[in-house]
Image (cartoon, rainbow, N blue to C red; front, side, top):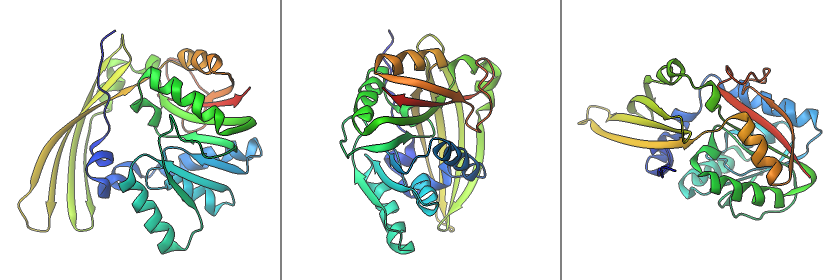
Length: 257
């Protein structure tokens, strides 16, 4: 099998101050609501967000009465989350840790959202599944999403291309991105070009490349069963019915056996 270094988006690695500008958009609240609907359906109370970043889902769910703990292996992103919690006087715990190894306690549900597991190799994801299981109560849930390899046709991959401009704390951020797909190995690689300009200063320009491991729904079901989970349902990221050849993201709900 071809070996590919997956890597992480630039905002995660070197430019955490731009993480929210890239990852929070007009659809975020709707997607968070889909997750909350699932938590309500399964009568969840305690939540472990193992890839919380700057805490978007943590704050959303805490405001709605859930007992949420956030974790991530980016100290810089966690600093942003903790500063927000202090600023907004929100009593929530953020923990430094890797979803493959972090032991926190026993929760009703663990979540890893917005393609977070795609940054792991297949072996790394299986390791994460085993560890996530150890952080769940008997019958606890694991909810996650990832791009659907079966639906990633050439036109869909081409449509991932984007050219966006945002402003963050006085800095204009221009980003152009396109992607390619290695279908045999399920590797989606994105190529970014950034231009940053603060006020009237000289623009800073650079390139960045990272890859995601993506899966078919069948692959995910097989991996989960192998690691002692029961797959309860698979949806689109908007909560819609999952259609293997059409749904772009697979939102999976699995229960610890």
